[in-house]
Every structure is written in C-alpha cells, then in structure tokens.
Amino acid sequence: METASLLEFDKKHIWHPYTSLTTPLPVYPVAGARGAKIILDDGRELVDGMASWWSVIHGYNHPQLNSAIKEQVDSFSHVMFGGLTHRPAVELCQRLVDITPDGLEKVFLCDSGSISVEVAMKMAIQYWYALDRPQKKRFLTIRNGYHGDAFHAMSVCDPDTGMHSLYRGVLPEYFFAAAPQTPFSGDWNSGDIASFSQLIAANAESLCAVILEPIVQGAGGMRFYHPQYLREVRRLCDEFDVLLIADEIATGFGRSGRLFACEYAEVVPDILCLGKALTGGYMTLAATITSEKVAAGVCRKGVGLPGVFMHGPTFMGNAVACAVACRSIELLLATGWQQNVRRIERGLQQGLAPCRQLETVAEVRVLGAIGVVEMKKPVQMASVQQKFVDAGVWVRPFGKLVYVLPPFIISDSELEALTGAISTIVAGEQ
Ligand SMILES: *Cc1c(COP(=O)(O)O)cnc(C)c1O
Image (tube, rainbow, N blue to C red; front, side, top):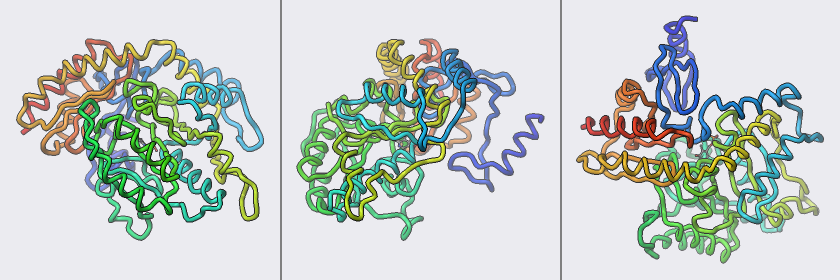
C-alpha cells in the first residue's frame, strides 16, 4: 500500500488515542525505529522524546530484547495460565518480588496498566469484604491523578480532566483530596496534607483504599510533589485502617531517579501497580503486586466468601511478554541505569533552562528522566507537533504541557537536539 492510501484509510477508519474520526489530526507513518530514533516512511529520523509514553526505556530494536522474544516464540508463545505455569512467568515474578519494596511479594499478571488498577481496586474491596467489613468499599485519591481508561480506573482520575460529568450515573463517585502543592524539593508545608487528612478521617468507615501516583503525577498534569506528602498518606492509611495502592505504572523502573518512586519517601504500599516500562515497551503487560497480609485476606475462606481472587484474564501471564519483561529488567539492572537517568536529568536541566526566561512559560521542572515545560496557555497540538517533526524530534505535547521522557539510552547529542528543539519551538509560541 502506498503511504498516501495508507494515511487515507487511517484517517477514515482508525481511532488513535483520544482522537476524533470527524476532524482527525495528522498522524505520521513509521517505517522503523532503533535506539532513541523513530524513522518515518519518508526516511526522516526523529529523536524520540516520549519513549512511547514512558515505556521504551532501553530504546527501540534492542538486540537482547529482540532475541528474548524470538527465543520464546520458538519455544511457545502463549498457553492459558489457568492450571498451567511456565519459566518466563515464574522468573519474571521472582525478579519483581526481588526489586520491589520489601513486603510486596504476591504477583498478579495482567494485560495493561488500566487493568492492573482495576485488579488492585478489586483486591482492596475483596480484602475488606473477607475481613467482614463489607462497608469498606470506597476509594480516596488526590486531584490531578491519572490511573487509566477503564471504568473503575477512570473513577479515580481527576474528575475535571477525566470528564466525570460525561459518565455521571455510571461512574462510581469517590473522594478527591486537593492535589499536593509542595514541590518535590521545596520546604514541606504541613498544611498540604490537610484536605487529605480531613477526608480520610471523615470517611474511614467506608474507605477500602487510597490510590495515588507516588511523587510524580503523570498524565494528569506532570507534577512532582514532596516525599513527605507520601509519608503522611502512609501514616494516615495506617491510622485509619485503609489500604494504600501506589500506581507506579508511569514511574516504575527508574524513570523518577529511583527504581520505584515510593523509595523517595521510604514508603511501602499495600498494593503496587506496574506496567508501561515493564517490558521495555515491547509488549503490553502489567502487574499488581501485594503483601502477604492482603493476599491472605483476599483468599480467606468462610461462608459467603469465594476464597479465591475473582479475576483471570485470557492472556494472563503471556509467555512472550513475560520473557521480554524479564530480559528488560535484567538489562536495566546490568546497565547502570542510575548514571544514565542522572545524566539525562542534568541534560534536561541545562537544555530546558532557556525556557525559564520565556514570557509564555509558567514553569520548567525536571525530575529523573522527566522534563516538563508548562506553558501559560494550551499549545496548538497539531501545528506544534509538525514543528517538532520538522526539527527532527518526536515530542507530543498535551494541553499546556510540553514534556519529554526519553529512552534511558539516549546520547548526549540526541538529548541536546531534543531540548534545543523544545527551547526554540516553545520560544516561537505566542
Ligand atoms: C498509563 C497509565 C495507566 C494506564 O495504563 P494503560 O496501559 O494505558 O492502560 C495507569 N496509571 C498511570 C499512572 C499511567 O501512567
């Protein structure tokens, strides 16, 4: 198929994330990708600033990840996980238990981030049900959050940006505390926890869990908040008998500068959600990991209790996805990811510094391998995107946010190309 007819079909028939089929935005056809570069059909090479939404941490077309997949396909690709198990799943879960905070040791594998959030929320409800406190079935979260697009995941996304009004009557209504305001490295303001503290105290009897993104709020605003906030949340959850679900789907696997962002606060959640970078961006796979205590509760036997966790997707524990995830974690631990993330952090600080001077820019913030330029006004996505492509980089802004999360293997010169293009293009925005 010629590129033109391919694009024509795409435009008429295919939804892309959050798009309209009546007024479609342009899409760029990809012919290949390697290292930190995406190669378009017309031969143009773009330095990738997005890591395909946090996930491609080792870059594209990585020989070791490619061979992990090929070896697994030649053995077998998938078998049902009901009543069967296999080496790739076991080895992956062993690694996950090893590298995640102490006490998290029971792993549920599922297909996507949103579903791992659904699984975490079901676990929390089932836990209190089995402990004979079935009234504890509601959730508390913080504003500006993003947890996925499935219904229950959506119910704890920011109510305004998540368009809750659109789903009124269908979406369960939960509790939203004010978003944390103390910046990551600012002086802790103890008043910051007041809204959360008041809500958890007032509703403890009906709350099964708090769910939040630790330290970095991703798609809901790309904000970094103070570790003390998270410590206070943990303390209050303990005080009021509420479980803590940490959604590290975006932050997991080193992105924030720690392997898991919870480590900044030395907080261990009761349930942890992982996804995105889990397979190095090769395949869709996610995991929900919990403690002995929660697992024991969920599986408790008794009259009217199922005694099992009530979830089991068809493609659970897909062997190819597990094999590549396993290799991706090995690679991460073997390649000095921390130096790379620190190097990227410095490069982003320096390279985005000129944006701080601009009248149109509200704030520039960097944490780990995440760089954000927040504009005062929303950018015109289609035209700005075109300018980035013309400048040889792949950056996809949304709303007021121009942000980058490059693959950890990006070279210094590629990183300079990225930040240089952002500085120039942002300076041109009115
Ligand atoms: C992306 C994301 C999700 C949803 O993951 P999907 O794989 O897109 O379903 C959930 N939570 C956070 C924090 C995310 O960044």
